[in-house]
Length: 338
Ligand code: ADP
Ligand code: MG
Image 1 (cartoon, rainbow, N blue to C red):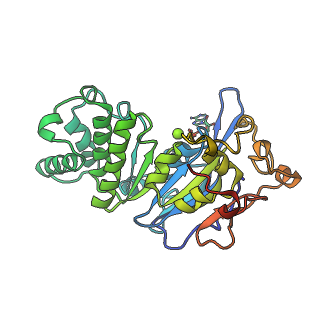
Image 2 (image 1 turned 45 degrees about the vertical axis):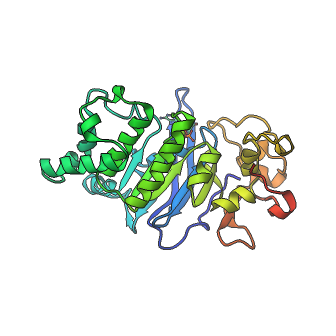
Image 3 (image 1 turned 30 degrees about the vertical axis):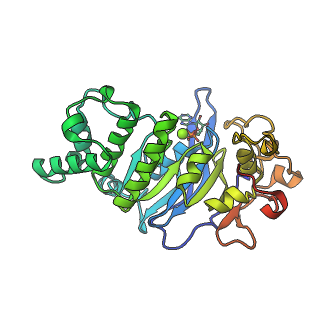
């Protein structure tokens, strides 16, 4: 896996990213290939999940889409408008359509500011409304995420629970009424009991505010519950894309199958049919050919030299895989997901 290409892109997407490349300079002087020719799209109203192990480039992808910073190569279009080549002023305005919810709610909120000021700030920066109008928007948006401005408006983030902070963070993202919400591990820092509440809230907010979502998580079960379509990433590349049920029930990429087999289950018969092989290679020195070949039980000599292209799985409507030796359909392998 870990392939290139854009066969999986559709026409009429609200957000489309093509050929994104981002590398970082490591402290040792090498270059980390965090994002290597990644293309994806999201149609209006859709939730696209992105899964992959830590270090696979998920957060870099989110930041590249927001041009924070602009990626080295590639383009992102919102409603057909290219944003990465936009002037700074234009980019600021386009960014209002795209908002982000981060992993750690507490550290993403300024500890010195009152909650109502934190939520109002994007409106002030965007020069929206009078003071009275802004206060109304803040109160209404906080209410929509289950918080009462009278009760928590004058508190500081440290006086709230993790779940409440993530609600504030969501309200701050919603005040500008964005079209697209990018959630980067939005529940990973929360207790399991609170995770479900925040996920439900995200679903409710998506409906209430007519949102389109990019939802990033290393947690396969969280992504499965919320996503219409899913992208699987490995070492800065896409290996599989498709409708969530299709990918989870009939994974074609050996890496996706390995991830799914690693999900803990109470049923001993269903446990780990393909135990993860070896360590993830260093992103400073990625294997040539398919980046997954060093861990793949199906790898052959072609995988060591030739990067597979993303191509449609025959007989499916919306399932794409970048693999020289994809797995057979579920009928032959059985359902992977516990
Ligand atoms: P994920 O979100 O999937 O865990 P990231 O996008 O954070 O992955 O990171 C992808 C790769 O880029 C990792 O190898 C990570 O160590 C590296 N990386 C991320 N940010 C930086 C940075 N600012 N400087 C150097 N390397 C980075
Ligand atoms: Mg991350």
